[in-house]
Image (cartoon, rainbow, N blue to C red; front, side, top):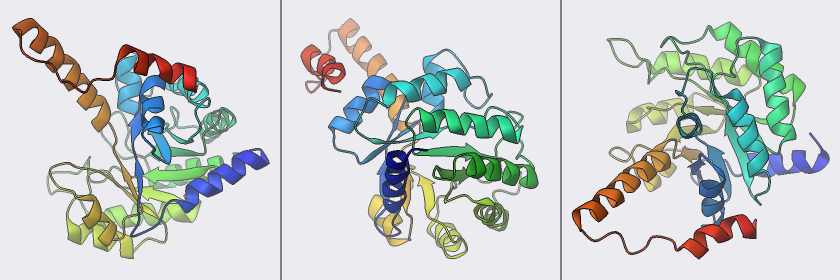
Length: 268
């Protein structure tokens, strides 16, 4: 990373403050990211579901590497701190994953999300996941690695194990991860336990039916991701609006105008 890029990554790291969490909305294309920048968010993430689905691909299957890198290049035009969801690295080979991290960093990203969930619904071997993290940190030392564990999403019949979650994220921090992400972590007790047992900023996925931003801050969460929520909301609004027109019903009155939407590509 260049000196400027390393400085930007350090600014991004500093935004992860327990008790005053970074609110990180996730974009899937240039326009959605530009609109979020315009709204004043300090940093933007990408959503792997949105990026994959927008290109006719399935999320979590390791098929959207090229699309992810291409989007990173496009978003580098925006005046924002960008972190990129690289799924499981699109490979199990540490050198290949490190190369991907180098490419997105060179394209302008200050951070990446790396998950341990695999396409077959299993969790990747702990030691191999550590190898991937070490490889990224060796190749791109300044890049913020947010290590995600899917222990709560891929839980067995007995439900999620907080102890397994802690074991994994502690191992990821030991390997060099600067942040940890546990999507599906919902109840106060589990969040509090994880926060108190890991020496790194905790990132949770915002769950509309379960979470409140102020409460998550009080529990010590340092980063709150929107994940695919905005992408799914956009799909819902698209279909709802199309059906309203077909049925002769009113459409929302606060939709951006043509000029406002078009100006996003002119302004940035």
